[in-house]
Length: 159
Image (cartoon, rainbow, N blue to C red):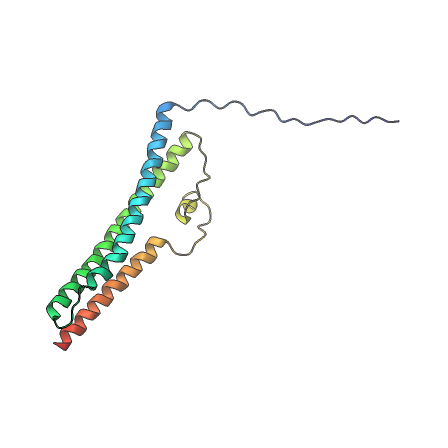
């Protein structure tokens, strides 16, 4: 009877990684916290401005054109302000994301962050979505403002 020799290919364990410097790890943790705070702040701003225009426009009362025009003007202003602040908030989010990714690489945390299309895109991966949430929201705020200005025009014409 012939005996066959069984050999096992055992891969050598990877060399132990050098310990991460505590100051780098602390900077990484701060970057993650800042990233999360920017995401939360951006989301809260988006919700605020999405609700603010209709809330202010709801101040319209029957019979008082000046109050209605003022309310619609404030609603339009809220939408335009929202566009600027949402855009600025998204820029701050992007900056925080870049710092976080840079520090993740420094501590060997890897590049497997894929929480958003923008995050995937920053890592050189396919975006996976056609429209950014912030872009869609900005267009909605533009539509709110245009509707408000149109309503002001109609009210003033009726006067």
